[in-house]
Length: 122
Length: 112
Image (tube, rainbow over the protein chains, first blue to last red):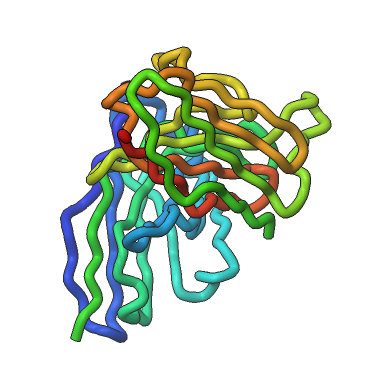
């Protein structure tokens, strides 16, 4: 059974960067798309971007273009999400999730990591 | 971007009664290649990540109880819990995958 395990909570200063990891197990890592989302308190998830690990192709949401980088290490079945120029509004729970490739635009998310709390505070 | 709007924001339902949640997209999410709608529903319990319940608007994920059902087409969709159980308390989200993925704002379901 596929499992995604994320790195631990982070506390960051405004203007700094954070890098969150997501390790996949129990499934063929390279066959899937991994997306990253975040969820602020009381709000729905917000999609940030995705990577297809076996070919390294990425796509980012317009809201995060230029500020987010998603990478993958096939040797460890791990995906990374780095967000730069942090602001207090970036305080949220960050999730990785496996995206089912049902259409050219993507698909629903059937396996989720446990979430990583990122707190941005001076 | 296709914007998703859910209603109501919250609802309280007695155990064993029906709960109905609505989701409206700003554009059609119909996928002509298979005549299905690119719409998914999730349940999120407190302190947990969302879990996928339904995709293609009405296809249940394996293991999801059959009291959960999805319907609708084009821009208007409904999630129905036919007989609410205590473990169904949480927030429910719709999500479209017709373009850049986008979630609705959520509907909180509580026991009356």
